[in-house]
Structures are given as structure tokens and as C-alpha cells.
Image (cartoon, rainbow, N blue to C red; front, side, top):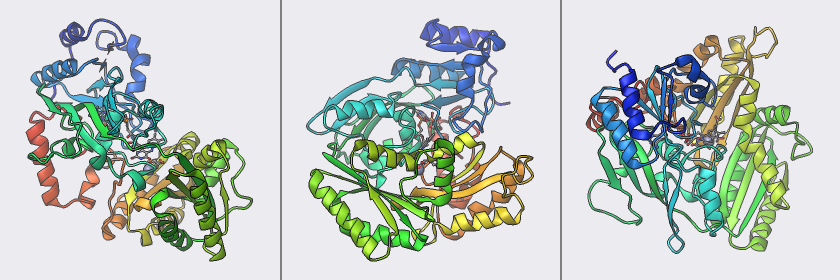
Length: 484
Ligand code: FAD
Ligand code: 2HG
Ligand code: ZN
């Protein structure tokens, strides 16, 4: 109600800014039916759980164009959803109603790289994998890696403060991002594109944009500190008899592998069985186990690192911590082992609807959430996976970034069903709040968790966040209905 309705005059104005081609603008205002197919990918999220009804997608090619678009939208009370690769998992990247989608896909250039300091500057629409390949050719690595790397944008990564598979080693984007350029809803360009690590002159405002999910402005450029690419990477995959054993293995890994440890990931048997069901790939170990861990090391000396990893595996097997394990012998095997972890999201997506809970919980209690949720779903009579849909839940599985106390609780179903959601929410959020966890470790709030923020943040904190939102976006046009 409080936003303006898009008219042909508005569209004509945007055409005058961006040009007439379909690569710059998709217009469904003039003829909704003719544009429906072109608009569809911008209206539907990665999980096909959230669906908007935008009639207009704008694809600016420069910061000036972003600024002109936002100023016009602000003046005319037109709501805007910034969109990167549209791989977000909380419904934040698609409209709720008919908000304009501002796609960053045409702002994808790598602008600068300093091969002494490792500083990369790129436009926000640059795809993560493209940036990483560019860096690989120069002996560097992007300090973030995740399963959606082939589609997600750097701007989207910053806006969600994505964590990914190697946060354990390279830290969060709050530490590695050196600067940003962003545009505020009134068209003001925020030039904070520092290339340096140190800058203690006033408030560090760029941090507000990291994890803001497009609610206070649009990130247009990114400057980030990239580490040297490790000369050697090794991967071990092992099976364990209990979650308690996984915790012991993590402690041993930190102690024995210390500086070369770059990932410690956990998967339960349920998650691996589903990946196997979808991919049909041969399982890495001879027999099944209740839990699996994937350990990656990144160092400068291949022989030294693989010796260390083999010694580690031998030691944890001798101590009875690990039941069985395997080491990747070459790059192909390394990728194949990673696929059992990285491929879970995609595999579950193929099987139907997935209820996702991306949570931080103190390690000692982390897997208990999966067990308690499974018991609850079973008690409610929903677990069973039968064809007629009487028991629509296929499996309750857990996996995630054990090294960061970050669990991904996934409930795989035949289709999204409100009966299941009722059993899961607010149960899961209450469970987490009782243990002082976070209801969103790395995916953000978006639409999915907006109303549950109070389980992880006090009223005072939410009040401060609302003040910030009001200051940066006083007319409330940026990604409305989401976040707070
Ligand atoms: P989008 O989905 O397009 O947008 C996400 C949010 O950011 C939206 O609110 C949008 O409005 C906003 N936004 C996008 N671009 C901008 C911009 N330039 N300026 C302002 N706001 C913007 N996340 C993790 O943290 N760790 C993982 O390991 C991980 N693995 C994943 C694996 C798969 C297979 C998938 C599908 C997702 C995964 N994710 C993971 C979710 C993660 O949030 C995204 O993959 C990624 O960070 C989002 O980038 P995107 O460009 O797709 O953003
Ligand atoms: C991962 O770690 C991603 O694989 C996605 O964060 C998790 O699908 C999920 O729940
Ligand atoms: Zn994750």
C-alpha cells in the first residue's frame, strides 16, 4: 500500500537511463504475459520456496546507473530488491510482491589486483568462481568458498556475510573485506573502497553493509584481501561411530594439524544416504557409519602435509576415535570427496522441498538438535516418506561446518507442507534460544527468519538495528518486508 505502483512512465524513464535492450531491462509492465518467461528466474528463489511477482528487472552497468535508479525509486516510492546470483537460502533475494528487481549481473568486472599485497577489487556482480579462477592464475585464492560458487556474486556474498567451507582458516568477510563502494537509496555513492588493511579514522561503516542483505543500500564494488594460494591441499574423509567421537576428532585435528588445517566438516549418515540416492556415486568408505568428517589441509609443502595428515589418521584410528578413513590421492579424488559434503544442498534440492535451519550452537550440544527434531517429527507422525503423502517427511539430517559450531539441520520432504512447518517452528528456534545459539549462523534472515530475530537478539539490539535502517533508508524502499 505505501509504495508507488509501476507505470509505463516509470518504465520509459528507466529505458532512458539504461537503454532499450533486453539485456538492460526486462519489462512486464507493458505486457506481463509476453515477459513472463524472462521474469520467472528473477521471481523464484534457488529452493523454489519463495516466489515474487516483479514486473520489472533493471540491470545497471555502472555505479552511476545504480545511483540514478535508486534516486528515482526513492523519489517515487518504488520498492527495490537487489539481486546477485539468487542463490540465497532465506528468501531474501526475490520480491515478496511486485518490487523492482535490481540485478547486478552486468556489473561483473574485475577491476584491479595487486600481486604483492593480494588485494582484489571487483564489481559486485562478479561471480565468486570467476574471481577465484582469476586469482588462481596469479597464485592467490579467494578467502571464501561455497557450493554455490558457480552462480553467487561477490556482492551477494558480502550482503549475506557468507561463511562457507574455509571460514575456519581464512576468517569471516568482516575481517577480509578491506573496502566497499555502495549506493544509498537516495542515490548517494558511499566511497569506502579502501585497499588497505588498516584505517582507524572513525566508524567502520562498511561493516554495516556486510550482512545487511540489501536493506540499507546496494553494494557496487568490493575490495578484499586475498591470501596466497596454498601449494598443497590434502583431504581426508572418515567415518565415526558417534557425535562424541566427532568432537574428539576435531580436538585432535586442531592439535595435530594446527596451522595447516583449513576445513573440518561434519556429515551424518542420513545426509550421505540422500546424496548417494541422488548421485548414485560409489561411497568413499567400505561400510556406513553414523557420522563422517571431512578434513582439509592447506599448506606449502605437499609431502610434509600429507605425512602429517596420514600420521593424524593413523593416530585417531589407533586411539579408537575414527572407525575408518581414506585420503585423497590426487586432485580428482580430492574433488570427489568434497562432493560428498558440498553436494548435499543440491542433492536434497532434487528430492523435493527442504526445510532449512542454519544455526550456531555450542559444539557439545550441536547434534542433539537433529536428534530432538527427528524425534519430534516422528512423534507428530510425519516421518515416513510414503508416496501418498501421509508421512511427508523423508529424513531429518544434520551436517555443517563443525569447525565453526555451525550446523545445517535439513528436513527433506516430498513437498513444502504447512503441517511440517508447524511442527518445526517455533520449536527449533526455542531450542536454540535456550542454549544461547544463533538462529542464523551464515545464511541471514531474509524473509524466512525475519519474524524470529527475537530468538537471537534482544529488544534493545533490534531497536538499534531499526534506527540504522531508518537512517540509511528513511523511506523504507530497500528490500522491504525482510530482515527487521
Ligand atoms: P542473492 O541470493 O542474489 O542475494 C542474497 C541477499 O543479498 C539478498 O537479500 C539480496 O537482496 C542481497 N544482495 C545481493 N547482491 C547485493 C548487492 N550487490 N548489494 C546489496 N544487496 C545485495 N552460504 C554460506 O554462508 N555458506 C555456504 O557454505 C553456503 N553454501 C551454499 C550452497 C548452495 C548450493 C547454495 C544454493 C547456497 C549456499 N549458501 C551458502 C547461501 C549463500 O547466502 C549464497 O550462496 C551467497 O552468499 C549469496 O550470494 P548471491 O549472489 O546468490 O546473493
Ligand atoms: C552448506 O554449508 C551451505 O552447504 C548450505 O551453507 C546449507 O543447504 C544448507 O542447509
Ligand atoms: Zn554452510
